[in-house]
Image (cartoon, rainbow, N blue to C red):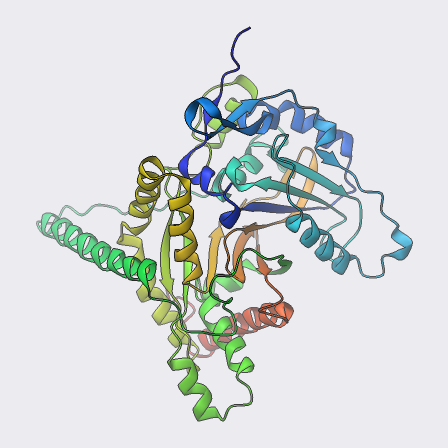
Length: 463
């Protein structure tokens, strides 16, 4: 009997299988029309199942010292597309029901004896959609960019039902013909090396002993993964463009300021100034993948880069009670400019890969848990479709996503769709009992910074 072809998991995918770093991704798709489950089943059968990981389960190979491998299996799509029988008469608040449903789904362990994905169809009208599709994927299948690419390849333009969506092009810098070009390139290389060394030194200190200051957003040392509450909020993308990437700092400062509400104003400012608070950020390392390549992979069986190819950087968050809201913008931009030229993400990926190959999963699990356990939160952003699309012939109104990984009590993800930004929070309510207040503060901080930009006439300020 021929041996079934088995493919080993990548180092990062293996990490997401460990008990201390178990991770899932939950996608929420809001539709403008009632959802047809049979159309979803047909669409997935013709596309997703052609991807090897969506038609494989994970097993340990005794011949390779217990290494985790992908084992191809026969898949019945109907078993993975779930249509719950909803009692609409007992659902007084559809938005709250979806929030509870999504949280319960995210915290329910996956069945490891079959392919690690499922898609739930809920024909219930909420304030932002006529129906919803909620996908749950084990993080070993792929990272956020892989799954967003899957959404692109499974969708079509509303304006042209036969055409794949277009992705935002990466801005390219025009090289100068000046005689100073070589000097500029040399200076850039020096900055890259210097910045990377500093970032790696700080990461080494974090792995050894340096923890964030104890604060109301941080779990207790040694905490394992706990159930999390998943909530979403939709805001205007145009508003975010005023203050790109600064929402997190101002919003967290506002929330922490309220948490220390019983302190005098001077004492509150002193407490905030003493807080060291950092976030771990997942960074996509792959070159831009064409959506056509992934679509061909699903329809023609061609090859395409897929999976988890991400590194991690540590991003210091400016936690202060500032009189000028734009100070958050200036501080965030200065930090981002340094992180953009650092090789920290690439080195961290190589480091995890090296540890996995030489020392095995237990060591990688320990190192990763220390990195995430010594920082306060995880955050990331994913650029979604910039034009209206339909998912298996269902026009979409928004897309949200949360990746639940690691021991941290707070995970923040931002996903865009056309003119909207969807804020996604995954929160351990034993640490942060009022996650909706935190979400309100993020939104309110954006409005305050936007108003400051308008009042000071800085509409064209580039951040």
